[in-house]
Length: 356
Image (cartoon, rainbow, N blue to C red):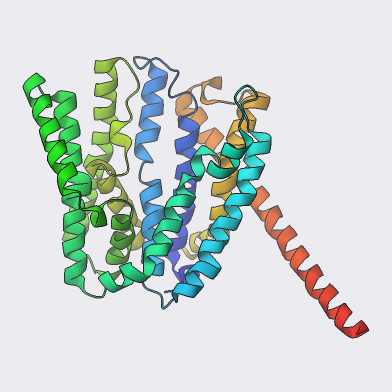
């Protein structure tokens, strides 16, 4: 599978990249806004409808890497090294441009990076697991069994415990702690974490879902979107503080969102011009991800551009689009510079050989 030649993969990358930006723009004033206000309701709405972005990125990686003949050496030499190299460069950039002067720790900033760079630690862990995961996906029965265990222990039971705590009586909340303890004792670590999304992406690419199955996926997905918006809002009103418990990537509702989005883009046929556009933009998605948080924060710090500048229903998508364009432009310029430097090095090496 060559991800550069798969139309829906390119489209998913572009829309997921934009969704990440929407998520971070809508989170700008999320913590400091009164939960009973119209503004917080809008932030919650946008935050809820893009919660699928990270799982979809992981699913894309699984769909690509688990279907490739790739050696362990190549994984480390090409892909892990690329992530580590990018992390070092961009953590330094963020440490320079975005820092708290009162409590600034340059060592911590360089080691941990900016808050959105947690993704790089996670994806490196998945890359390191590819040789093992490729053995697991040799059998569809093994895949289904793995995904069933992951659904039960990573998604379903933890969310049931969460719901019992938020909406149950005192006795039920106490009982939820018992279930949580049992879950901790079982601790099937192999099915915990993002490997479930990694394998799920591969599975969706391999399985042909019939029309009736797609309809079920879409209905459950819509229910997931509604659940995320409504339940987080209800809990926020109930506790009088912002609630993000049902935003988590390992909530059943977010899983439903993610699968619905992935299956829809895999099934949808767009005009050729859309695929050409996505193909050109998708190759910059990683750099857009790296730079976009810097743009959001600099717009906030230098120009006071946040969702509160006007109606957030409009300001969030507008600011997100502007951030996307700026991030794309910077990524494009970086790419040109890298190509120019590489060409210059090649020419210099060629000239040195001629002189000798």
